[in-house]
Image (cartoon, rainbow, N blue to C red; front, side, top):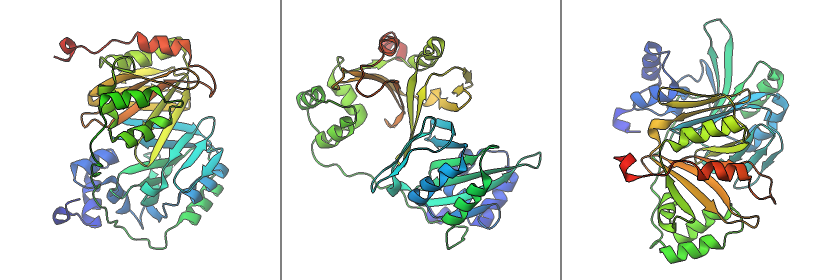
Length: 351
């Protein structure tokens, strides 16, 4: 944030009191603060500062039972309802591999945490634990539900409680990643791409070839990646819902990726938002912020795997879709057919 224009916690609270109905992320953007600073301003009132300890959080959440996990970026909000199960915490990454809540977490990106209580109009209280990166951007949130074990929830909040209950945080801008050298050419990319045996090798391949994700899709050739029309996004959702085709939807940020695996049913568009409103899965996606849509084929030892990837105007990945499959099995014919029938990009449509 611009330090010359920095707002004090008192100023933030006064502004917030004038606009209580505004969504936190929208309020923060309009008032040139981070969402983390907005939440921090309530410490000692409706918020408790927490240690951003991924091991303590993940090891304590299973006892809480049913909760709602929320992970988002600027264009997609991914919500899953269920328990945190099959938790594993490593040095560089942590996973939650439950039937409902499926996460890939990168703890080094977690910088701030808060337990937040908000009163509803009917007097009830909404409780959440919210975690932010060094820029004050939300990386992951956990919301209590009516079925949540609140004794375990409160014990976890106590275990995470920060020794310093201050109502300010010091954010730092994201440092640009320095170029590592010349990017690889088309022939190198195609050779390495053809040798993949697992989709998880893709990120490492890009790193070694010094290529950004969307640049690689644009270079590699239409046998491996082809651009889709913007209308392919809504068609994918609607076709998957109509056919009750189990899909995987990956959305998140550099601190957490959240995954839905299964069919989708209740798809609705409201203004720029395309929404899935199912019993245990909610997705809210800004169609107007989708600038590039690609279908991608990656070779694996089980045959090629097809994904649909959506990028914003800054060429950052917003969300990915796959057909749900078991490791060791070829991908579903229904998913592959669905993707191959999506409308292709054309310069005429773009104009």
